[in-house]
Amino acid sequence: EVREFVTSFGMLGPVVLILMQILQVLFAPVPGQVAGFVSGYIYGTYFGTVYTMIGTTIGSFIAIVLARKYGRPFVEKVVEKDTLKKFDKIAQDKGIFALFLIWLLPALPDDAICYISGLTNIKIKTLMVIVFLGRLPGFIVLNMVGNGVAIANSTVSFIIFGVLMIVSFIIFKIRHRLEASMTFLINKIKRETADCQCSYHVISIAPEP
Image (cartoon, rainbow, N blue to C red):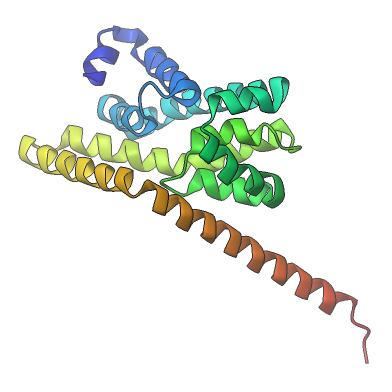
């Protein structure tokens, strides 16, 4: 249905897809995974990735700017309380590295994180670089899968689509456990990185015998 809707606009289809992706980041009317899959199905891996990344980057920029301009009261209205409570402290305390992992790893509310990241003191330019680099790998994979389904025969397409639906359902059912696991992983990596940095500083200032 999404494919038919996009292609009905003809040459303006890419623009419609980009707008859908912007709205998905801001309001989530269509899951980003669906838009990424459909873009690859219609336009192939390369152009599909370009279109979805344009929409995602613009949508993320708008969300960050809105959060930065209107502050926490606004973010509390558009982000679920549990999500805000869980990831606000991580974004504030762990900084750039944690945000990059959140946008990179699957099963995390990356769209909501755009609003939450706007509450930090990190420069918007820096946030946009992290958004782009963190989200790019996932959208490349989605567009590759969509393109693969487009060029496969009907039986293979049905099998691939069925597997994707099953995996998506499982991820949805255990999403809270996955969020907890990813949060633990982020904290662990951050602690190990901090320990390595501390060890380096201790070694570097040690006097020579």
